[in-house]
Length: 254
Ligand code: NAP
Image 1 (cartoon, protein in one colour):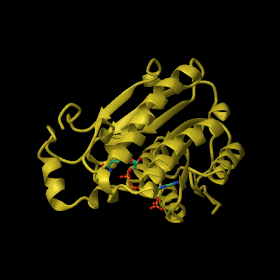
Image 2 (image 1 turned 30 degrees about the vertical axis):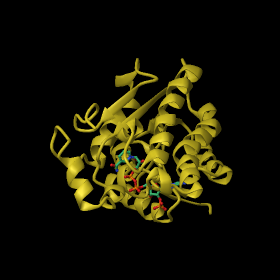
Image 3 (image 1 turned 90 degrees about the vertical axis):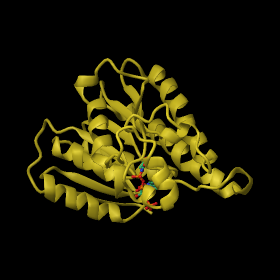
Image 4 (image 1 turned 180 degrees about the vertical axis):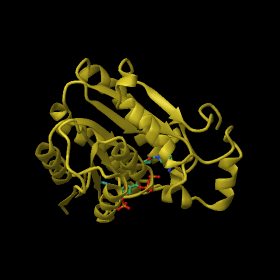
């Protein structure tokens, strides 16, 4: 399941830095990839879905930046190898955003072993695998951003997802210490963001969640992207091992 396609509508400049964004075919990942591209990064968009090639092409056309679409499963050795091959070829690798994630919701009594294993394999195993494969290839001063979730604090029908996303926070803090001072590692904990993942939530539950957001609206992928870009910039140069809640103020509300 490996394919890589590069789009480079304009001449590349030597100062261009490379960022990898996983789960970038759509939703938050596509928003992050577009934001980095608009800021002049060469973005490697990686996703299980072949749709990632179209997304990479559309972002290149819109922004004038170079992009590379890589069809890859972040939880597999082959997927990690395909992403590594892309960044090795492009060079000046400076940022890795581990965004790919899945939900397999069920109440505890009905949670299947498959649903439990799949969420942990992708949401936690994916970043662990990619960071292990890619961190040493990041340039000095490079950054890793892991996308966790407000659900890491617990959520009904999501113990598997909550566990994977809470594990990602402990992992982020440990990795930040291990990779310092060369690489900074942080996590973003999004609240309710308007994507296909949240479109799947039944209306009643959705309205219930929206009523508990102090800023009284869902977040947009671009609002997660702004924080990811900041965490990968010099403006956050003394920030590592941190978790930023981007949830419209819902951090301590249920
Ligand atoms: P989304 O719309 O479902 O998009 C996720 C993308 O990741 C899809 O393109 C999916 O491909 C891809 N993907 C899934 N498994 C993969 C794998 N093994 N390897 C590579 N790519 C894979 O999700 P989203 O709402 O944008 O969420 C992005 C991240 O933010 C996730 O980690 C999610 O847990 C987190 N998050 C989201 C929200 C929210 O409100 N949306 C809130 C908190 C945290 P397929 O279509 O082929 O599955």
